[in-house]
Image 1 (tube, one colour):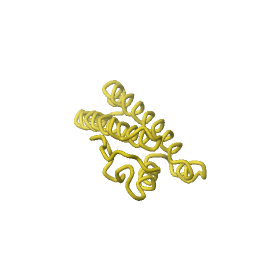
Image 2 (cartoon, helix red, strand yellow; image 1 turned 135 degrees about the vertical axis):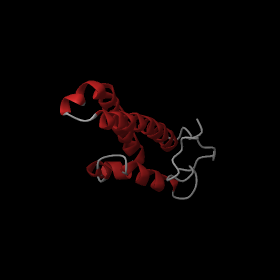
Image 3 (cartoon, rainbow, N blue to C red; image 1 turned 90 degrees about the horizontal axis):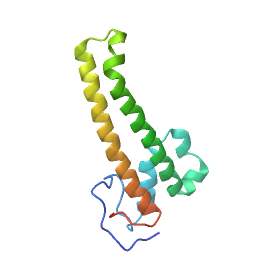
Image 4 (cartoon, rainbow, N blue to C red; image 1 turned 90 degrees about the vertical axis):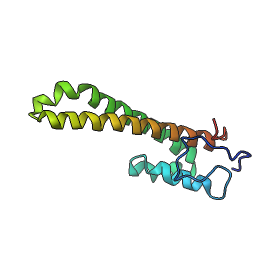
Length: 124
């Protein structure tokens, strides 16, 4: 599906070709398959309809954000009970915080790709 715009979002993933260029949808589908459990990426409907794969990736990443936020919010109260040293707890909290930020970036990237696949453009 050719698009008339080549302007893309700053959140556009570098692994995905610019919308409207040769094979861009295939590169989008390949990238999206990396974000979902392997079995989903191999379902025929997901292979034939990348926009469906994008929808599932949005849901998947959204859930991962919720999990990382929960882990971050409960780390101070739950990790000491496991007998972990304070240095490990602090490191883990930083890890969870970084993961939330990374997942939020991925969520924006998935949204941009989803919009392009749905024909709404990637430069929004």
